Image (cartoon, rainbow, N blue to C red):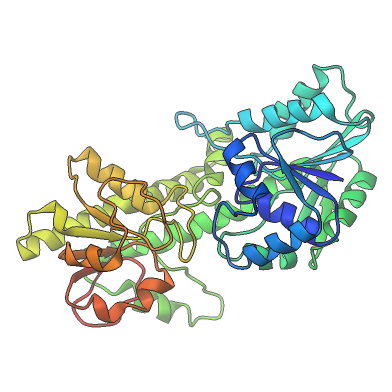
Amino acid sequence: MINVIGLGYIGLPTALMFAKSGVKIVGTDLNEKLVDSLSKGKLTFEEKGLEDLFNAAIESGIEFTTKYQKTDTYIVAVPTPYINSSKKLDPKYVISAVNRVLDVCEKGAVIIIESTISPGSIDKYVRPEIENRGISIGKDIHLIHAPERIIPGNMIYELEHNSRTIGADDPAIGEQVKKIYSSFCKSEIVVTDIRSAEMSKVVENTYRDVNIAFANELAKICRADNMNVYEIIQIANKHPRVNILQPGPGVGGHCISVDPWFLVGDYPDLTNLILTARKINDSMPSHVLRRIRDIMREHGITDITKIGVYGLAYKENIDDTRESPTLQLLEKMDEHLAVGVKVFDPFIKERMVDHQVMNFEDFLDEIEILVIITAHDHIKNNLEFIKNKLILDTKNICNFDGVYKL
């Protein structure tokens, strides 16, 4: 049996995939409301294919509880935030989970940490916790780092088809864990040491952050000299060795917008490029705010309540709002006392911000300027209803005349 600790965006799909594949799974989370919902057969977030996977896992006998289980294998998938002041990893949730596992686990148990952590975190935070309890690592318990590698919106496919990394002190234990993940992972599974596994995950997301920052800086340069950044990127990408990403209103989610800070926090003198990229991407909500100001001035609009922001989720077709560019934009507006902006997102079913409108038609009726932050299929399929608005399209999905871009 495997006890999966943490039933959020990573832990729940992972637990369900194992269960569907025939592995006995108990999912544990300290959130009683969440566990109660899952136990009653109700999912806690939307994701393509998740409902079918959930039903299959229930048929396979998956259980949900707030209590840690006595077993020989644990997967820890709890949040790993960073400390705003230092940009270093805040390991409190991982440490808490590991200690609770140690309270109940069998001798020789394998503790697999899937949570994304900064390089050296297991040596710095996890091992001391275990050793301070007089527990021998490698004899009494075994440590593994198997960082998750999936993205909201395509989780189920990526769980099966993305390659995985298993970091282990003992290669034999690494191979043992590799066989466990092979129950559903159809791609290559690499076994390496723990520190390399830690670093590889952070590097993956940092690479993407730096490339997005390049596109965003291009957008600012082109805006300053009235050039079309999208056309320029399209032309440049015709070169066989060039692949520039698309600019956007900011970087959200719990990976790309967070993981690079781990490197900046731990290696402040060695991360000049990474730090600059983070600053560029974090500056994009302010850039969007300036574009809104320009449009308002051009059209003589002074009433902030006539502005509508479309999209609360950090990316298209999901309900995940973690580190959302819209939330960052609203925070910037609040700093300037610009309150009253309308917000709408078809994927967010409960009110979570002030002046959130729950009906799309009502939303459009109340605004003059529409700011598209998230490129949900919903807005792409309803472009004919927004043509009479002043539009700031930060995702380049509107191809009709008069639309403002980044």
